[in-house]
Image (cartoon, rainbow, N blue to C red; front, top):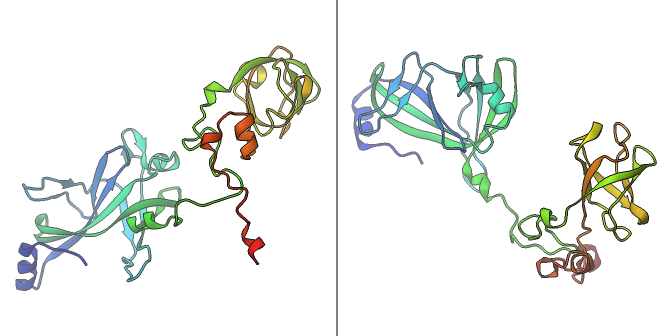
Length: 287
């Protein structure tokens, strides 16, 4: 249900003719707010409010607001027409959207009621939600604005039980820190673009499912997952490198985790954070 001030309700009851327009308020995750009026002049709200909605900026075209009873997510589809001059800071709005600048951004749609063009009586909030940029290119992009009710779309209960640990290595639940296990070394011999030797000692399989990063040379900055780590320092990557590494190239490696309790206990000494439940039967075992 939409709420309106008593002043606006009294005005609408007394008048048959009035002016309306849409106002859009774009709220970025970093706190920046941009306001646009789908009108031919700027819209200034009352002195108590003080907000100004600019008529200069992107053009907006929306569909009808879809509202439904029950547990559904209300949505609003908005097409935004932009030019190179439509910027956030000095960056065109299309580029901002392409680079993820609208991630977690919120759009609020207001309906503005005016006695005369530019003379505002009051506004009513019609819709608000989080922006999902569906497509963009050329001079336009399409936003699907989803009501904040979508945040309720989470698994319940939030704790689920799996045979292997549900945490990812080095995340907050795991508790391990990458810098405590990463090691630096050098390439000592090259067998192929996918297999080579390093001067770091380890047990067989210690770096399986881990990763290797090249710190200098032609492959500087390249990171690949490790498929196998055999004895005597031989490492096989999951994918072949674009060019052969050179003997002496500096590298750093970090181990992987198969999420099993024994690995967590014996390899990382982190068993207190492990949440694997290997003795709970799988769903198909119940049938």
